[in-house]
Amino acid sequence: MGSAAWGDNAQGQLGLGGTQTAHTAAPMPGMTVFSQVSAGGSHTIALAKDGAVWTWGANYYGALGNGTTAPSSYRPRCRGCPVSSMSPRISTAVSPSTPPAHCGLGG
Image (cartoon, rainbow, N blue to C red; front, side, top):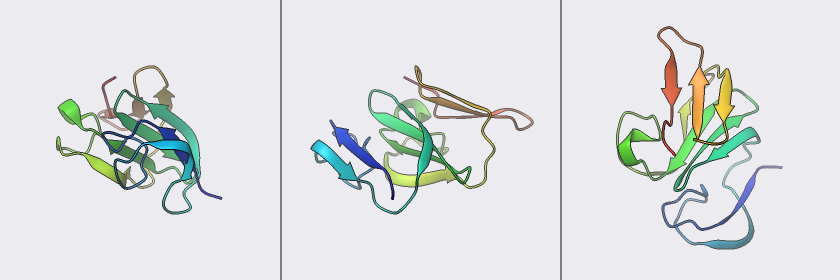
């Protein structure tokens, strides 16, 4: 079974492929199962069980960590990228690479 999301989706932060608000749990596209999810005000970062880091939603100030400021509705940041920690308070995933890579800084 994949993941589900619900709530405000004005910036695509639910990862459902659009911006329609979901008043009940809506299945996310694909069968990705996430082990950790951290939501900002208008973007989301998730760590899949396979180790891939996914980011979607608004991309103010590069919050999605994809090198742009364009929004994304549902796509992986990097596949197999080892993540050492995720902060639920500020939507940040930290990779133990050299130099350290930060994905989705912002709140």
